[in-house]
Structures are given as C-alpha cells and as structure tokens.
Length: 128
Image (cartoon, rainbow, N blue to C red; front, side, top):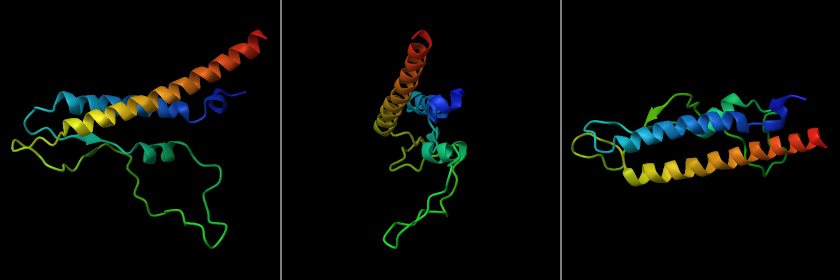
C-alpha cells in the first residue's frame, strides 16, 4: 500500500494551493504599491502536468467534443492582464484578488478534508 494511492492528487493539490495562496496574499498586500504587477498561475495546467493521466482522453463517438491538445502549458507564474490598471502602474484589483483568495482557500480546505478523511480511515483500519 502506497500513500500516493491513498491520497491521490490531493497531496500535489495542497502544495500548489498553498503556493497560490502565498502569491495571492502578496498581491493583496501590495495593492497600494506603485508599479506592482499582480501575479498568479494556472492551477489546472500545473495539476495536469504533475499528475499524469493513466490513459489520455479521446473521443469514442462522433458527437463527442475532442480534447484540446494544443493548450499551452502554464508552468510558471504569470502577470495578470489588468482590466483597469491604476495611474501609478499597479495592476492589482483588490476585489478580484480577494475573490480568488477565498476560492483558493475553499478548494484547499476541501483537499485537506479529503486527506484527513483518508487518514482517519487508515487509523480505523489499523486499530480495528
């Protein structure tokens, strides 16, 4: 029995969500810093790169939507394109950053609860 099999992708998800929380918190902290550029990364792309799929997706019938094979890999942190940058060059949108931080926190908590449930099941199996 391997722990990787028990926790699944949640181990990598927790690491990436933690890193994203740091980046988003930095954006929020620098909302009033002149010239600061808001940063983020594409969580979904990074998870797809880190968690190899056993069998690639493919269409099995003519009506199925073909998987996108040409999607660019976003393996690095990127600067957000601002909807309305401030006059001092700051690109942080506080409302957007707070919403992204809250969503990230909820998804982090969900993965943490899954891992916690898996550990509880293991402890029950060990204790009997």
